[in-house]
Amino acid sequence: MQPLPKGAQYVTDYFEDTYIRPLKSRRAKRFQMWYLFKVMSFILILGTTRGAFRKQRSVNPEASMNISQIISYWGYPDEEYDITTEDGYILSLYRIPYGKTNSENNSVQRLVVYLQHGLLTSASSWISNLPNNSLGFLLADAGYDVWMGNSRGTTWSRKHLYLKTNSKEFWAFSFDEMAKYDLPASINFIVKQTQQEQIFYVGHSQGTTIAFITFSTIPKIAERIKVFFALAPVFSIKYSKSPLIKMAYNWKSLIKFFSGSKEFLPNTSFKRFVGSTLCPLKIIDKICRDILFMVTGYDLKNLNMSRVDVYMSQNPAGTSVQNMLHWCQLFNSSHLKAFDWGSPDLNLVHFNQTTSPLYNVTNMNVPTATWSGENDLLADPEDVKILLSEITNHIYHKTISYYNHVDFLFGLDVYHQVYSEIIDIIQGNP
Image 1 (tube, rainbow, N blue to C red):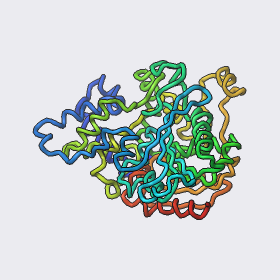
Image 2: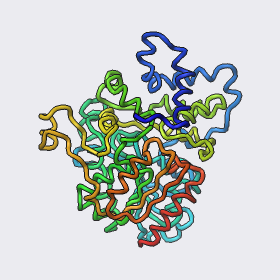
Image 3: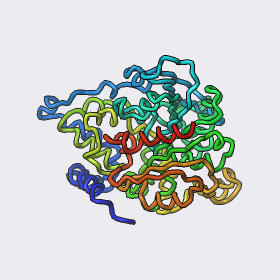
Image 4: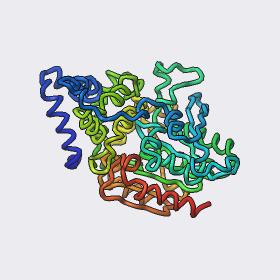
C-alpha cells in the first residue's frame, strides 16, 4: 500500500493528534477509526465553547435549503420529477429548463445536458457555488436544458414502491444497481420528456463509474449519449490514496457491525446543523475544511472558504454500506468488477456464474472527454492512466496539476479550467 501524499497525511495526522490520541485506552484505540466517522460531529460541538459563537462568519442561506429551493433562490426555473426504476426505487430528478439570460423563448427545444453526481454527494453538488461557478447554472445560462440525477440511497432518493427505507432489503445495492437501473431510468425519462434523441452526459467521480458500466453494457442507452464528459473519472482504485477509502477497507467489519447492512453516512438533520450552524464558526471552519480535504485531497488555495457551510450541510448525502463494501472489494485492483456476494452460490444467483464478472470499458463506444487532477486522492493519476488506455473513442483529455477530487465541483477556477471547455465541446457537437 503506497504512503499518503503530504496533504492527505497532514489531514490524517491532524485528526489523530487532535481527537484520537487524547482518547487513548484499550477501548478507544480499538474504535478510533469509527470515532472518526461517527463521533466527529459531536466533537465539533465542543469547539463552540469559550465564546466561539462570537466569531461567526455570515451563513449562506443555501446551507439549510433543499435542491429546489437553491435553484429558485438564485432566480432559475425549477422542475422536480419522481421517477421509478425497474426494481422499484423512486429517484428524484431535478431540471433547470433554461437560464436567467435566455428566458425570452421558453418553448424552444434546447440541447439536453444530464449531470450525475459522485460518491456520497447528490445533485446539490452541481449548484453549491455561486451561479457563475456552478455547472448547473452555467449550462442553463448558456442555453441548455439541464437535468440533475440522484442515485438511490442519497438524500433525495430514499423511497421505494414497497420496501421500507429502514429495511435491509432497501439497502442491498451498490453502484452495480445504479448502473443497471438508476441511470437507464433517468436517461429514458429525460429522452421521453424532452423528445430529444440524444443528450450530453456529465459525470463526476462515481457518476463516471456508473456511466462506464452502463454505456459498455447497455447499448440502447449508450446510443442516447452524444458526448460523455468524465470529471475525476474512477474505474479502478488500485492506487487510490483516499483516507476514507483506506479506512473503510481496513475497518469494513467494524462498519458492518455499527451500521449493519443498511446506510452509510446519511445526511441527517444533525449533520445539516453542523454544516449550517457550526462550520461558519471561525474556530470550527478549519476542521470542516480538513474533513472535506481528508476525502478528496488538499488544495487550500482553490476552495471558496465562504461556501464551506453549504458543502458540509449538503454532504455527505449517504449511500449504502454495501456500496462502500463494493469499493473496498476493488481496493488494490486495477479492474472494475461487479459486487462479490460472498459465495459462489449467491454469485450464481445474481450473475449466472460463480464469480463476480469484470466490466470492460473497451466495449463502450461513446465519444468521451476526460479531466483529471494530479492531486486527486480518490481518482489517482495512475488509475486514470490505466482507464484512459481502455477508452476507445477518446476525444479529449486534460490533466490539471493541482486539482483534487472536489475541485471539479467547487474549485475557484473550475469555470476556466473545465466548464468553459465542456461548453465549447457541446457547442461543437450540436
